Amino acid sequence: MRDVVVLGAGLHRFGRFPEKSLQAMGREAIKNALDDAGVPFKDIEVAYVGRVLAGMGAGLNVVSELGQTGIPVVNIEMACGSSTSAFREAYLMVANGVYDTALVVGFEKMQRGMLQIAEQKSYGTVMGLSVMPASYALQAQRYMADHGATPEMFAQVSVKSHRNGALNPYAQYQTEVTIEEVLASRTIAAPITLLQCSPTTDGAAAVVICAKEKAGKYAARRSMTVAGWATGSGKYVPKSHDEGDAEVNTGEVTRLARIAYERAGIGPEDVDVTQVHDAFSPGEIFTIEGLGLVGEGEGARAVWEGRTEINGDIPVNTDGGLLSRGHPIGATGAAMVTEIFRQLTGEAGPRQVKDGNAKVGLIQNAGIGGVNVLVFKR
Amino acid sequence: MSPTATSTQAPGRLVALAPGTFRIPERLGLPVHLLGARCRACGETFFPKRVFCANCSSDSLEEVEMPERGQVQTYTVVHQQLPGSAMVPPYAIVRIALPNGVAVQTVMVEGDLASLAIGDVVDLVAGRIMEDDAGNTLISYLARKAQTEKDEVRGA
Ligand SMILES: [Zn+2]
Image (cartoon, rainbow over the protein chains, first blue to last red):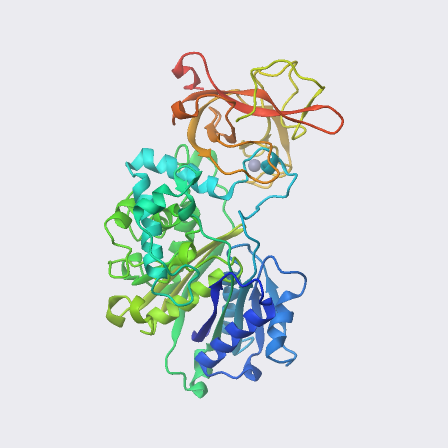
């Protein structure tokens, strides 16, 4: 396989834009990414599009805004992990020599209110079980009992995310919140309060990738290399091999992270900056454990002690994460890639980690249907 | 308000909200044995039933009854109304570990949410969820704190 580099990335601001069309938002993100990469649209050979709620053919409707060059446009859906899935498919095509230059796009316009994960008349809905934060809350309750964590530690994830979001002009929320405000916001599913839930968001994100051996002609100012990847859909663990009454299910993230690290030739200790799927505040705590960035049961304390802050030793979700940057489900993964690109190229401004010397970036993006782990190197 | 299992009076015929998940008991509040599936090839047990085994992909599975008593592995109290749900907050979702290794997620019957704790022994009982258009009473399995000794669930 060939080395593949990210040459540029771009966003449409995340937030609520009821008056703006999906085409206009997607067009802006793609234009920003192409300009950032110095790649003209006519050189793009294929587009992989992550999107969930938009109707049939939405990918083409957006991509063709840039021109009708006749390229294949591939729509990919894995709920909240759609655009890292799109990224992975584009990467594998370029790495295997099918295309030299590819565009990855993610976009979404969402309705306000709680994301409905089951159909209206399904058993899970009627029974009140298909409450998205509840699955995180169930794990959080067990985690608190097992590891002596407190609701304040989960709330701290949101405090940190909002602080980072305030430094990100593309974030949906650019205002800091106090831990008192987070804890006092209304409870959704204990211990998770409203300010520990990612919002519904409109937004778009785009990334341009290229075979490294073909990237020279673009005189890109900088790039990052795709160093490792892993993906999977939840492997069944026989009950006889289960570690007792499976409390916090980080097993799948752990399994995939191991594969991604091996492909990248690194270990968790080499990671300089990380993006994780914090749809709800416990997500950051459980995932940094699953990725091996901290030991089992140490995640909550790591957050509490500031280790995941921009100036901490394992900075996480430097752009505000899903909680503050926002979570337009199809666009989230490509926005994660965008932030890692800014960090590894030293262009993250006030959010920059490690004095601009970050060399390895890690992404974990989960969706109904699987988890994607990606590793990048400068 | 959580659903009631204590009232044994039901206006209509009892019908399972999710057909085939358990045998319909004579009246509300009685314990129910969930109907799962056991793989004849590898021995894994599943609830709800599967046609193909998740572990080995065999399609040779037999119906098995689940134990009606288990222990609370974890829980959460939901305070937000889910659109389309018959459950009115606050109500508790519990994940129950059954002694055969299967975990079941359901809602607690109406009761003292504040005293709910990990490790509580609970029974699965038939509870009323809602009436359907034909006047039937739609029921499902709910968790209710066991009234007997705590260690009875162990060792199975
Ligand atoms: Zn089997």
